[in-house]
Length: 128
Image (cartoon, rainbow, N blue to C red; front, side, top):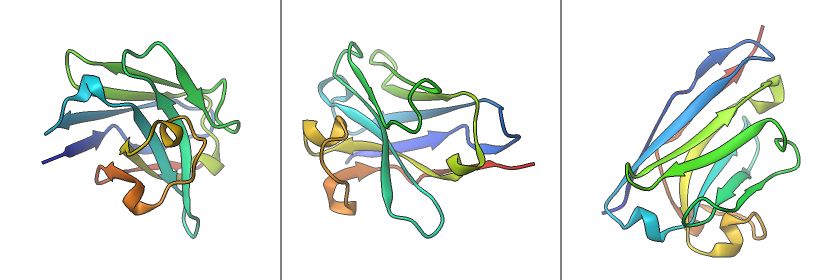
């Protein structure tokens, strides 16, 4: 079965950097578009970034564009999200997601819990 395991979260100061990782198993990782989705306290799911099969094309929400970088290593079944210049509003539970459609991976369709396969999530807290 599909399994996605995130790591790399934690507490950082504003302006700091974190890199999240997601190790995938139970499916052909190289044949799946992938996404990062987050949920801030009291908020709904918010698509953050997506990436195509080989990692050639990447997509970002406007609020993270220029600060976050999504990447993948198909040989290692790993998805990554490098987050630079973190802001308090980036505080959220971050999920590695295998979307059920390309449009969702690109951020062109809303996410619901049944819209993707999900990791457990990793907490990112940006605070002084």
